[in-house]
Image 1 (tube, rainbow, N blue to C red):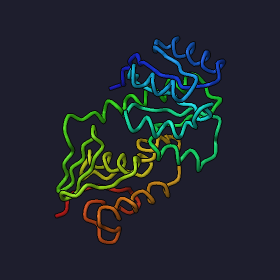
Image 2 (cartoon, rainbow, N blue to C red):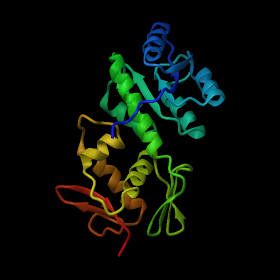
Image 3 (tube, one colour):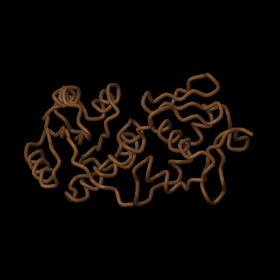
Length: 232
């Protein structure tokens, strides 16, 4: 069944007045409502006051770097954040996604591409809004509180480690391809480096007290992908 797009309330945090105007016009033409902020602090205040559905965040803000603002946003909200920036360095993009951004779009971009990204993060946000914790064996994950507990001990996970673990745990016992994980967790639908998934799986295993050679929950299926299943 096709996803039915809904109107979203979108907060645009962008210091360039020309870009703000263009975004307001193009998003309004697609029936989204918008609010804007030219600085990081004004954006944070608007976020807390209005609770938008999606945030479009520029990194080059005059009062505070957008990466620092992203950390502040993540401390108070799980709102989907799409970074829109002229910075196109691969390492910087990965760092921002690992810090909690839901997507990254390099300027300049087409209005239809931005609208598609907005629909995608809204789909993921709605799908992830589970009413209760996900439980797999001794692993308990609370998507709303963004906490993961294994055998009664809280796991200290980075934002992307948590997202990866939650995605796998929501489909226990199912083998999931790395390309799907790159698409759904790292928002790289057009391909990316498998190494990104491998590194985060390595970190997850270490924090969960297991290894690839002696797995308890995270099982590698060679040539196919990975699955999360309770110990037998």
